[in-house]
Image 1 (cartoon, rainbow over the protein chains, first blue to last red):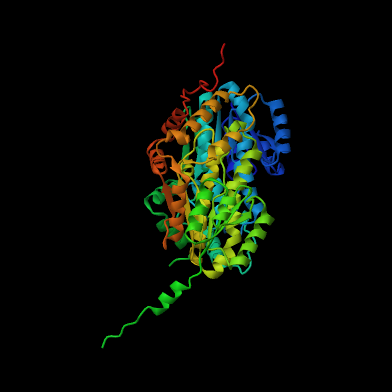
Image 2: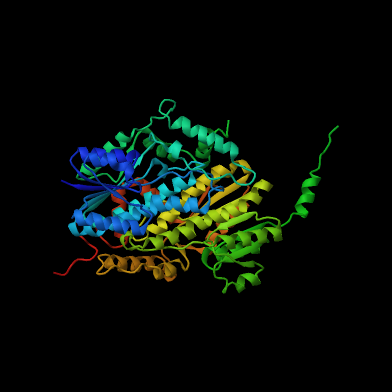
Length: 276
Length: 308
């Protein structure tokens, strides 16, 4: 029976993935900052631990407890992450830095915590949850996209650096997932004169259209679809390096590669209602 | 009857045109220094800034105004930009050049070193842009030129922090360009291939401490040897560029009425992304690991074979 550790398991893709792995006979270690929101996972047989991936003390403390119980972590799923919206000029430095602390530095740190043991066993699998947003950038969400670009690069290097130790690295890239992103959406305060107000309104309108499966022209993925792809990746003997899930994830990079930057910009700006 | 309208107004405005103001970060050496020289020689009011201004007298002699700016220190940046705007009426061109390369394999890199790499290469770039934007928006003109790298298109083992920061710069440049279009501000990304500068000397000093009995020691040795070889000016390696060549492209991107969104400079900058796009991830990995003379066979550690 393999042991899997999932970060950010208190909601969304993380929670669905924890459930699915538990149902498929894995030993599941589910972590998140908020342990109360994982009680349902505990009843399904998951072990739940409180861990903040940006806090070194919390990471050390949690891994100490985990390694007391489990000799080995076979699979790490780096899922903890969120989306910081906002136009570049409006983003505060703390907002910007926290986006990278969670989405990028946290992912690296947790990987570092399992790598020595995986190297020793000459086996292991680290599955990073990226996004199709690592292939293109939309105005109004620069911080989020840039963090996902960084994950693309780090996943490539990690794979090159550890594959000779028998460790697999996979990058999961869902496109457009049903989410409470809209309720959780974080926007910066407007700056003097509110020069981005029109864009902001259009951005919110666009997001609420695109991410609501009843309205959207895009196919919106359910959490379970992403979780299934993660499970399939974890069960593969020779997992793919990048797993694109959904039509959007496959189409967007293709569209972008065909267009010039300026033409792609126009397409995005049209979505934002700033070009007729 | 034919009436000729002479473009008198245009002729007049030409003669009284005020020189443009450019601010360059990280201008004490390398690409930044060459860029400052290129701009000041062209008659721009050139602010050459760096976090170490002790060796910038030569730039001062050429007419550059030297300012101390550390792009990780917010209040200092605010003060300096305000001061320069008061002196000049506003910055027309910002060249976000400050940056360095943090080497090291992921498992050995302390998060503090990764964080600092992003503080300088990414967050510093964004913060400087934020500070010049209000005045640029007011005047409905301005140009932000970000110095990225061909390293924003692929990743090598042993230098992920640097590459990931340059990938982030790619994304932010795209986002910013879209956001500023409505205000008449242009955003440009400069992507040189390898350049002969102090880059490698600095990078070699910044390696993380080795883990105890590190399995990566052999890889590190090979990595350092190979990258020093590649960037040795005496060797004149294929595709490696001079800082002056990059500076000329930056100047061009500042002067062109409709600049390109990305300027790839040198053979490496053009070829490597192409190779990357043609090869699968695993084939590209092999190609990269071969560059560093670390052949790869899965499941067998080639980094440090135990002699038993």
